Picture 1 (cartoon, rainbow, N blue to C red):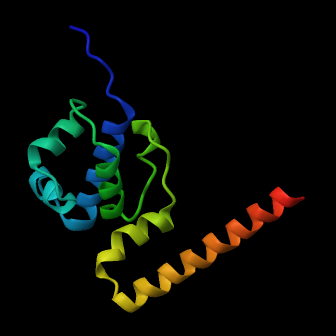
Picture 2 (picture 1 turned 90 degrees about the vertical axis):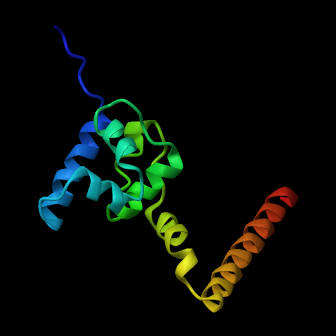
Length: 123
């Protein structure tokens, strides 16, 4: 009987699970699944190379694993910017004042980009 080699993402996730066990004590896949925020059956399927996470789930996994985005390319996704991923992850936890500050910064960046684009068009 020949076996099909496992795909890189399943191997990557298994390594992450083993490292997680080292940090948290020898806990089960059920506890790892709970930590990640997914059903145990889903995580088992990922570990066994039977299914793979969608991009938003890969983001969630990365957030839970210390913002480690190295699994994304193994799934065919672009590696997200870690800072933007952190902002997305922490956004619900920040105050409205902090959100307003972030929005103001984004508005300033958009205005600067628009001005630069206008300048290029007139040159």
